Length: 282
Image (cartoon, rainbow, N blue to C red; front, side):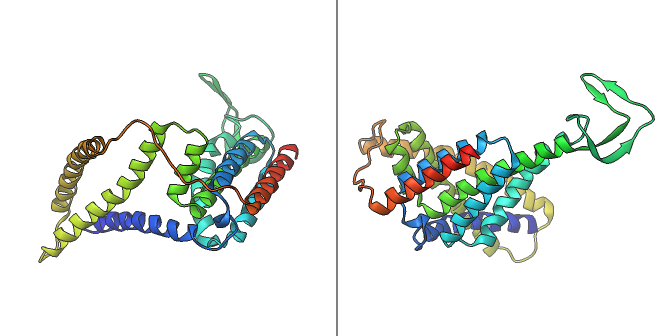
């Protein structure tokens, strides 16, 4: 049951990641001390800046700026950027890499790959005699990769330094729809319930085993648990909704006890805003 073991280990990591995120948010770092409203505005502002920039140099400068903020916030840089680089490679580089070839992006060929006997016309594409990577195409790939890396690093910086309830409170202050807030909250809570339930079922199964299980039986057990979890999810949703109605649930989310922004929050907010304006002009 090695593939099941691997799946259960990943579910365990989901639970661990949630608790680690809460612990990181309580550490004594720069962003941990800031108000969640400042951080949510910072995230939205800089995501827009990253999307608007059309040159590689400003994206590199933004990446270095986010790196410095991550270091000052005392996060584990290796674990942090290991995830960032992986997601940037998959959703940035790999997706955009075909556009580096002159079949899609015309330009100066800097790295020939294939030499054909003659050129061809396939539908709307012109296949040149020499297929290779162009300078313009590589610029597009690098640009998209940097955008993904910067966007992911900004998001992770906020998630790793802000507890989930504080993020919801900040979104409520900025008039996020209540329906979206409820969906996000219930989804976040159920992820941990789901992971814990699957882990308990697997441990109960394993504790009753006296010999190894072949691949067929393991797949049958996994498919049966998937069906069971699907039915249990539907039942749990109905029970939760009835419990919410019995306790006077309405279609609005009300949060109380917002504190005023202190001098450090205003100072950090002004600094980050000025930094964003500078990046817009680069």
